[in-house]
Length: 180
Image 1 (cartoon, helix red, strand yellow):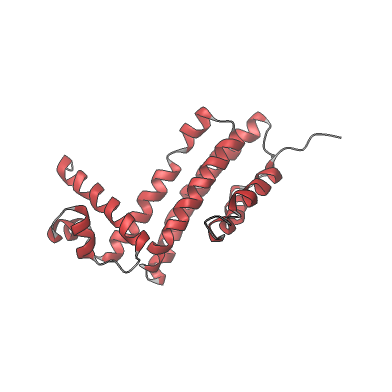
Image 2: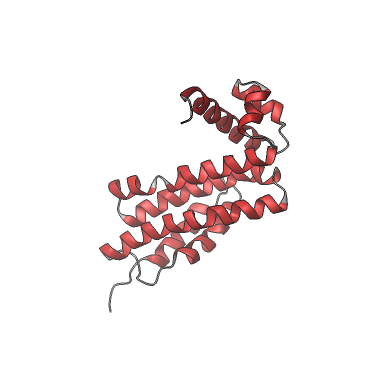
């Protein structure tokens, strides 16, 4: 069992690294340790290499995002839950660009392989809820949805951000169509 102070140190390191890498992908391990308020030994005991730290930040963020699905579905209709969840995913993916700069191509491939399944499973859970209540087309596919939404985090953020409009179009395409 991991001691509570060790869990807290790990959580502080991950939070500091997430913020630091989002601001500057070339942030050093020592800068992360300083930002987290831990010594270099504590940092390296938890994350022996910079790449293991970056991969852990990615994994932590995916777990956070995929872990929100049940709560969203409990409080919102499926299409609104999907809108809110996808908006959160887009925001996280935009922040991730700094993290991506810190990864080697091999590590980038590894994290993509590790996170694809949980993300598609989260989307499937929301789509299935909408299929069940009749608000989402029965042929909606989670992998297709993920591929379509990839354009959203590449859209320029800021006042000219087209992602909300683009997401509305994608969600409209998921709605069941009234019979004529």
